[in-house]
Amino acid sequence: MKKWKSYFLVLSLSVTAIFTGCSNQEVPSAAEGKQPAAEQEGPVEIDFWYALGGHNGEVLEGLVKKFNDSQDEVEVKAAYQGDYYENHSKVLAAVAAGNQPDVTMVEIGVIAAFADAKVLADLAPYTQGDEEKYIPGLMKNSYWNDKLVAVPFNRSTPLLYLNREMLEKAGLDPKGPKTWEELQQYSKALTKQEGGKTVTYGFSTPIDIWFYEALVFQSGGNILSEDGKSLAINSPEGKAPLEFWNGMIKEGIMKAPPGEKYNAWDVAKQDFINEQVGMIFTSTGDLKGLKDNAKFNVGAAFLPANKDYGVPTGGANLVMLAKSSEEEKKAAWKFMKWITETEQTIPWSLETGYMPVTQEAVDSDEMKAADPNFRVALDQLQYAKPRPMVPGYKELQEVIMTEIQRNVLGQATPDEALSAAAEKAQKLLKK
Image (cartoon, rainbow, N blue to C red):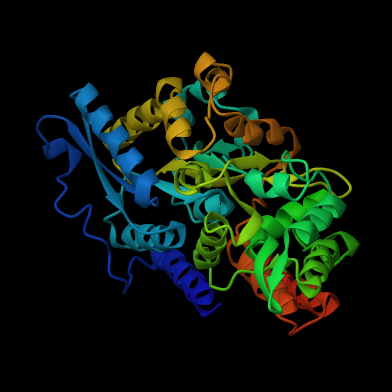
């Protein structure tokens, strides 16, 4: 958890530096040397910082090249800046130094913090109503104080991934469990031991805020109070996920993968690919990678319901930086609009597993003919809720993470962990 604390400390210091006009952080060099727009000849150059590596990053670079080749008015300089957390810190440091990119990705749970710090531009003057093309369920983390500050791009929800062949061999429905009780039953049936050692777990999930949010929603609860001023998980609905996970871990049918931040996600996915786990929670954005690397039939299903189904949306939105020049902002929107149009979002979705972001794409023949697994996330959107949209949540989610992990590690009871989170939340939510 030290890395999480370091990230949020850097993020907080960077926000402060925006207003003091200085920062001692090293600012990435991607934007160095960019001439003021008025001095440029030829196309307007804009910097785009992104946070996707591996295959998905390669697909994104291909889209940027396609955009640059398709017209001669805007030249996008794309640069990978690490994962979401690293990119966030670098962007804020660059804003403080006056050397910010023009477009970047921001994970949706941090949109409010960026907007409240006046880092993001109001998009309405540029979109002129074009935002109506996006799927309404993906727009809930795009507004701050009634201003449009972001548009959906690499968006996701958590899914339950299944080794269908393993389920069939165990006599289980290959479509997967539909309730928490069935998830527990399936996990027990899939777990195998040899010589007193577990060689296959039925289920695994990172003990992560995103999945915890989902289980709270499924239990009929919310993360914050309606006014956003207090934490709402110190309740039976907030305790239910911890009791559920603890029970499965104690029974030996669920593995809580080791590691911090996305390292734990990587462990869960590798265990799944290696057939050491039968079912996992992970993002829609992992669908392509899992299908390409697994030697078995990969299935996707809704997250199982408790009182009801429920999921948070996730992934990142595209934002325009407020300090860019007017000419750069116009160029930035031209790129943002292009890369989220139906013609681009369909292949982006099919190549990565992220959700298409326009309703037209959802209704297209290409998406209807695609692997049914691609449709699961879209169908699950009817049960989706936005991630909390208050500035203090950027730090509060780390607090919640720390406390639920303390509970799962046996260092605190559910009541102790949630009470500690609620106490710390009062200070953070007053910011």
